[in-house]
Length: 448
Ligand code: U2F
Image (cartoon, rainbow, N blue to C red; front, side, top):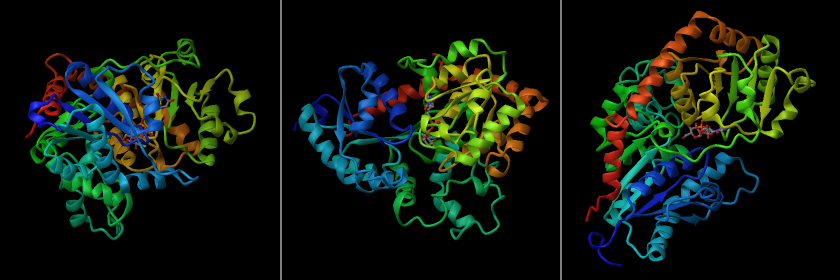
């Protein structure tokens, strides 16, 4: 293979194929591919993940390569994800070598999901740059990045009564509590997912850039802290405002239904792509909606419908609508939506932010608790479900506060400010456009 400096650029993109990780990554890569027509981008993910991502038209200089995935064998998705991560270093090294031959160009840069801490070594072996994408928010990145410091201050043997202590020893994290930290940061970090995330935390300072789907004004203190500790920390979001994305289909006619509802009246409910609340909580949500007569639009997988209370669907056919998948970004932007009930996955949180819609968080795992705290205590645009799980009375109360009460009004005002700030960031002279230019330079840079 010829010398990298003499050959045209070839960027190998290594995706984490689970949850909503690969979708925002390909959105940004597609955009970079349009902006750099002479650079080839090879997108490496599993066949199932690539099938979805390549179902839309992609530029000719962006091609897919399917990598093997561990068999599901009926195992829980978290077990399959861990199995994928544990062999990813070996698998991707082999696949990247093969894709170089297939494309006929040496790889000149690795862009990877930040989960792949092994990429620091891999890039060094190949003599190329490493650019990492953290697919969640700035606060969870900061928590992982500071794993060693947090363990030193808080200890690693359980929370020991420190649950409510604040992380005020980390810039920008003074309102985050020990209890909100992703479980992988504390406890045993010697195996599985926690080990991979710890490896990532130690590797990130070696990355040429770490980029994130967020905007600087959302969390300026965390941005400046991470900027001082990483080579380049780039906020290139909100992606759904910054770059053109393929339009989402409204197969179940959610938007015409929303047109028939009053402004700020509807509760939109979705728990993302991985999580489903347990049956008892689904019942509590249904009962709260029915009792409070809150109009609702609920993205709920078909198999979960069986867990709704008897007769609920018939009794609420005029009040609400349940669909297996909804065009979420367009829904949140609709004036009828008054509140977003969410698991606090990062993409959902950011989509809520750019729409200015108050949120009710019911976090489940990973970064979600921290995101919920950011929504309620840092940004002031929502609340967290009391006691951590849905109850009929807990949800009824918070729905009333947000849809009818004064604090709901304040959340909407604050939401409007953030909505504006997000749009400032993606203007020609905005901070995300500036950071995107740096990202473009970085992926096209030839190190050796
Ligand atoms: C994992 O997140 P999830 O995939 O569970 O959730 P989100 O990050 O919120 O992303 C869900 C996306 O799916 C879209 C929605 C979001 O872009 O607009 N969607 C939709 O369009 N229609 C629907 O009916 C339902 C969803 C993980 F679980 C989280 O903790 C992480 O924060 C996240 C990112 O790393 O990945």
